[in-house]
Amino acid sequence: AFEIVRFSVPRSQAQTLYYRASTYLPEEALARGLVDEVLPADEVLAAAEKVAVELASIPGESFSISKRMLRGPVIQQMADNREEFSEDIKARWSADESYAHIQGYLDKTLKK
View 1 (cartoon, rainbow, N blue to C red):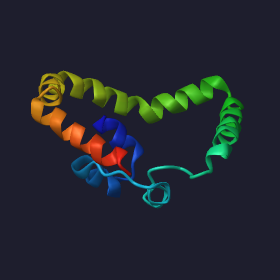
View 2 (view 1 turned 60 degrees about the horizontal axis):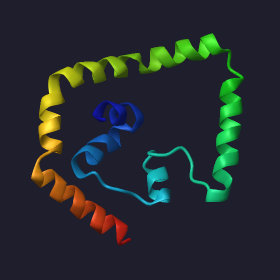
View 3 (view 1 turned 45 degrees about the vertical axis):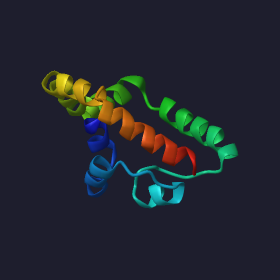
C-alpha cells in the first residue's frame, strides 16, 4: 500500500497520508492532488466511460509499454517490500491494539 501511495499521491501529501491516515472531503482531496476530478454522482459513470474510450483509442502495445515503464519500478518495490515486511505487517494488523484503533476510526467515520 505504501508504494501505491508513493506512486499515486503528490510527494508533498504522502507523508501526511502515511502518518495521519486523514480522510478528506472531495474538494479538499482535489486541492491536495489526491483525485483527478470531483463530479456529481450522476455524472461519474459518463465521465469514466469517456476516459475509457480515450484510453482504448491508444494502440494496445504502446499503452502496455507505457504502463510497464511507468509502473514497473513500483511493482518491483512492492514485491521487495512484501518479502521484507510481510511478517511485521501481518503481526501489526492482527494485533488487538490495531483492531481497537480501526474500530474507533470506523465508529468516528460512520457518525459523519
